[in-house]
Length: 621
Picture 1 (cartoon, rainbow, N blue to C red):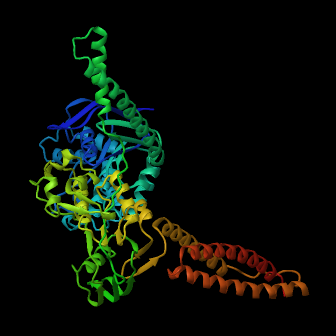
Picture 2 (cartoon, rainbow, N blue to C red; picture 1 turned 90 degrees about the vertical axis):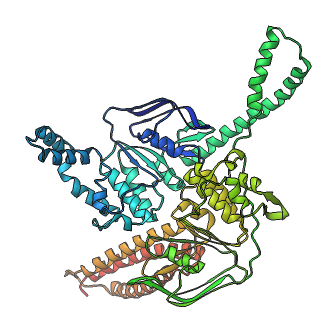
Picture 3 (tube, rainbow, N blue to C red; picture 1 turned 45 degrees about the horizontal axis):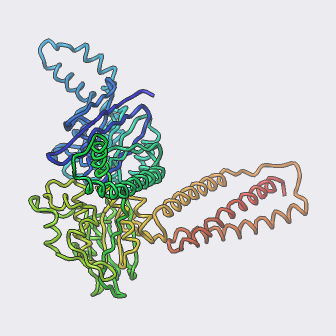
């Protein structure tokens, strides 16, 4: 394979904070690599270094000559006063730079170098750039090219940045959390695009389904070193556990030997000969291994939820709209005790407005929302919490409480609680401004949970959180003795923590689906396939023409023909009942599965009887 990128002995630090040291890896043509690490370990910094946006302390980075590299940052920035189309010319790429050079050349006396520019423009097909960028923006559902960037949502800005990069047709694509702020349809579109595209990829993402389906190799930064795994996410989990178990066994063996050697050191204070000196040097090396902390220790978050009564909230005939856009239309719902609900839907369908109504930040146009007296909300919002940059991390927590109540009567100090959230002591006494984006989100989550809420509302909780933190949070939410609403585009996370879905289809169309996200997508695909098949059948029926035949039906055939008509009518009636039940959204998962199987058998039986009916109908009666 052709080598696209080679990194040798790369080292990077910020002051006394060493992110990684002497790491080496490579990416070749066709490789799709996912990068995993805890927040604060330097994932984004490494991507910035590789894209040339940031320097490094030591090592070498070698890119293949003339390699086209595209980079989509985690939070792309554009001036607010430029249009969507202007944004696609803003950051510049080889084609855009060619166009700018051409325009500059035209206003320069004598137009120096014009022919060379024209040749390069022809070679890069730059004349067609604007048409192609509009085409890609349309695929990404950005249709208003004159819209100002300041009016775009976070997801729309991310899609403009993706269009900026995809138009280049890069050979090596670097993505930092590409699914952040993208709705589920766009995430699945991007997933399919990357799987089919003939490009090499280095990507940081928390979306484990996306990672599993797009990447075939994993790189992990852990304890300032880098580890490579030739397999998908599931393979990585298994091999990482093997590595951690082996490392912990090594530390345990070193500890056993260390105790013996320590006793020898204490008994031999006199000057030693050559062999004793060798043993003494070996002791200090052994001490370094023995004093390492155990790797991958299981973290279990167990925060006590306050008591919650049987009445949670009741929505009665709620209506909410903004102009012509309906958010809620005669919406009624009774939320049950210990219910865990997921909310899904495309951007702009009203998910966040629904949460704001629940939290009292928005008022309904009509209808009532009655919230139980014992309900104690914990709200984790997309916007996060504005921290004082000059505060220490430990002070952010102690300002809320010095001691946190856990389950089973246990109590944690603020420092112990922060360690549960993967903040080691050295991070706790560092300043907030030194935290990475993901670490800030983790600190925000910590401040929400430590107040012991009994009703959690999490709005896009997986954005900027690393996979390790997500695993801890998933485990906590599964055991959470309270109520939960999650708004998320993370399919894996939703599958792990919710019991059912509230699906926002737009214009006030809200359906309750009794299952997790994967089951919902499977049902949705089956429904679409069924509707297409039904449409095809209807079209065939309209095209049927009775053909003249030379012979008449026999008595037996006529009886069969009449029976077929009765059978087909009965099967059609049963089929209609099942279709209405499937579309009602009221069926449980088991009933949904049973009805789907019966519908498949019905279709096969109908096909057979209809074909026989057609054969007989062509015989002259």
